[in-house]
Amino acid sequence: MSTLDATTISGLPVGSDISGTELVPVVQGGGTKRVTASQLRAGLAKSGNNNDITQLSGLTVSLAIAYGGTGATTQAGARTALGLGALATLSVATVATGGTGASTAPQARTNLGALGAGDYGIGGVSIGEPGNLNSLSLTEFFNTTAATTNVPIGAGTAAGQGYGIHNQHPNSAYSSQIWTQLTSTRTFIRVKNAGTPTAWSEFAFLNSPTFTTSLAVQGPVLVGQYLLASLPSASGFSGYEIDVTNATGGSKRCRSNGSVWQILNTTTTVS
Image 1: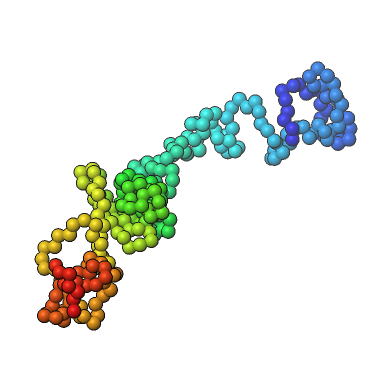
Image 2 (image 1 turned 30 degrees about the horizontal axis):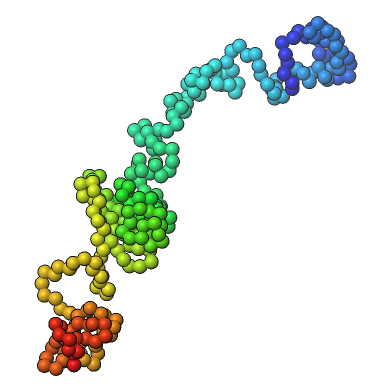
């Protein structure tokens, strides 16, 4: 039904004495109108279950809960009447009050000390790509891109792409990082000592070790042992040393000059 305003409606006959087609005089706002009984009834609330009411206005008391209201005239009063308590107004409940202390799933897991798939690169394909390896502060797996800074090699280029692990000490001034290049087995390690990252050091592997600075050996060194019939290519190992075990006069230490293997400290080709 339509909303009834506060103007005076008077002069109505008894409802049982009129039918739906009879005209009824109605005084409203100082003027008289004639409407059919059906039109008049359409503008009045029916008795019993008033399921055709579309709007209520001008109420001077609160509508009780039993009639679909809140039993209050304020938000706080309504929450109290409905038994909602303080939880209804909390945007983020703290862990201490039974909540997570967060508004996002990852932050909630962090606050609760829990892990989800992909957190810190564990159990997920998409791993974090830090912009600066010096900024990492949590133990985690990571990937680097051409834009990542403080990588061991290739910063600012595709050669700087790779995979790594950051291990964080409880003291934030200490940590370690291991990094492997995306397209090779070149692998590096460094640590943070008293808040300062050290220079990267590269691993040397048994199958193809390369040392870019001096090498100190605390003990005997055994170089490759070869026969004259099976010498490696001198052009492929210029500067390298080998032992030729069946050389004339006995085993000889030899070095490649890029063309032939010469007996060490001479210009004589081994034979």
